[in-house]
View (cartoon, rainbow, N blue to C red):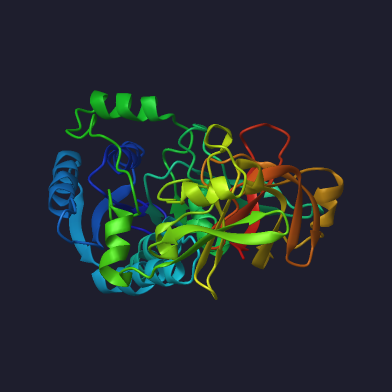
Length: 376
């Protein structure tokens, strides 16, 4: 067969779930030469790896495509699990899904598929890849765009995938809603059409993060403190900074007697939230809900994938920032070095999380990613 007439080869990461199965089915229907790969990355007690692997095989058999299990457990442990522990130990909130996509799915796996001669790597992510004119209008550039199904959009998790790879990546579900995906899977008779969505950490599944961290990091007790006027008062004890998340209430154990001595009446006491972590002194700083908000954040390694002056977007009020998946898009007012100021206050800004920059294309829901960095 001549190069011009051959089918384009696509490798699909089959997770055992309905999304990747539907993605593979769509590509088969479109005439691609499809192969399914189950990426074995994490296989610890309580993990659904064996069940998911069987479901992935069933899908491949039903679609009549080649199937292979690729073992990336060592790479996953080194690049994702160790990063996960390391960030928590530093008092930061990691984002393993972003690292997993960058380093594993569209890193090690992508590189292996390209080396094997595949034309594309595809997945069941809800995101789109579009070509948009550069700000100067001199050329078109490929960028990640939010999925049509805004409630399932996963573009935030994909922002660190190298832009140079986008020409070899396919997201067949980008223009579909979740309901449409399930309906298509039922229509095709796929056995996992109604399988519940996987939750939790990328390629780990449902994970008790507290237990996971306890096994590796144990406990390290320290003080819980809060501001009282100009003073900082010790109001309780924590078991380890890694067990707490900025902007959340879970696990905060304070001594109400101390609060009463501070002049606070029990009936007037507002719920307390994690405001900050003082890693150097092993202190957990708590405060009221209002103290969780800020319109400024510092971003390390802030980079943009468009080469033109980003201040043109600022001037046109077309630059937005998102600090968590499916979170609100905040209009950016100013960028000075690593400091970003937003028009509206953001809640629960946590160090270690990604801050992803989106450009307004003129149509709500079709914003494209133009850069990002990690919150300090």
